[in-house]
Length: 360
Image (cartoon, rainbow, N blue to C red; front, side, top):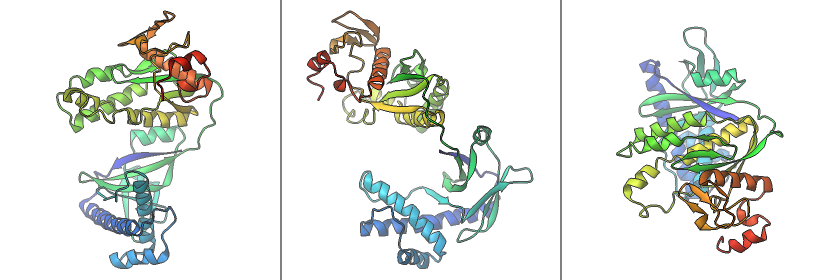
């Protein structure tokens, strides 16, 4: 497993800071040159660049072969990702580079700082960067993580930073525990089939915002992580969540602007990223399921009807079973996990299939 921990270089003297900024600008230009070159050649492979191409970049920018090769590798990864994504040629806006063990060495520092990051040449400026540790790094190290040999050096909003790469062996997957479903709701937060609920106060915070600004998203993300850390994973071996990858797509124009502005603060993607990392660390299997009609399906009689749900209330019109709609959805997601299927349509229930002719 790999995680990153960012440290800003606020204590760096002016001379070293200017040297690093110039180095980052050079690496930015070299990487963009290789991106343009690979895109023009339609080279979207993950193979390393040939030595002639590397030498072209080396000679053009007057750097070393090793640094040009590292920037070409980074450019290859960016081009491949962009081609598989939106298909548009990427333009670098951030000044961030990955430095491997050929360029950097991280060692304990004997002094008022905690670590010494030594740039050891091969195209990088030779210098020692003293760095203070952070609470995140200390907590990771206490949990038996180790600082890797690779770092990311970058510049953001005029501030230099280093991303330390922390590494740890992946734990064995849990064999004891429950299969739990989790329903994510813009209003009610996260509702689990085992009775846990968290994040319901995030919606209350969102309602206080009059505008959509950077600081409002930062506040919601911070509050969201606070509630996520309160989840008890100790008795979970499989966590089944909804696949809501495109939940917000196509909503523009369908809802009032005020509601769309508030809906943009529903940070479901970052929540899933956090859950994915946490489950990996805990040895929990994370399974994504089809969310279609999970809050309208009755687990007692096995029948689905859109009239079963009214707001936050679920009441089956066929058998009378009642529940909270989000809890019912979470329990149905757990049911999909136990059955080992992706969606309700896959359940071998003839009455469900007859009710669900419009699933498609």
